[in-house]
Length: 294
Image (tube, rainbow, N blue to C red; front, side, top):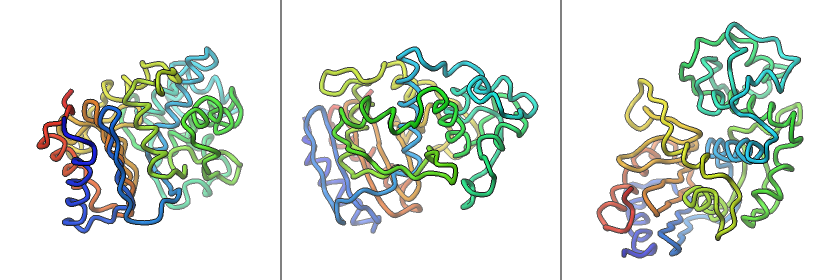
């Protein structure tokens, strides 16, 4: 089997050949791992990869019987004024971006309205139509917080501490709620631990932290829509591709790429080059013939 270091060496070479603005790359194949840093090993915003942590939070509460992701989200936010059709929108719809509610990202998304969740739910739904929006994930976590309290506090003993991720910063809106779909700050190796947990279907070194139904849904329950191939399939926080791989993908080149038992984690400050970097990683995994199919 090709070693993690062999794969990493090729990824480092590809990133440098493309002048890709990477901070770090981490490769996990089976239990073999290797990491390379181009810049100081500090916590940085993982951007939309945080959406997967929100899925884990909702899934953990569901596993505990505390929260129903398939119930109308209005059950948990009863003071909201609902737009047309929103009474049928569930947390699963919010997390898969299929609420049919449109509210595009802007730099002032978290500050423009007195209450973003209420603004989002007050807009009409067009049915199970894909609209990618950070407001969707934010609203899902507002609903979850109505049951479990502060979401990072809820996750601390159930996810972060078991993974050895101690008190990670998570940006908050003016109302004191986590911004949810972004703003979680992790080191590259911490992000790679999340990747390993997801690859191993919710187990962390033999200890189950999350039901496998959530990780399976990330890589199987695809919502297809009209978009370029790299963005044509979405599930619970994940994108299909490139090729036979799938990935978590945050702005500016935050990538967690899954192919069989291989997980490649990349942190970067290069939004434009991220799609090509993902393609390069998958090509390397395939060309080196490691146990990466499936």
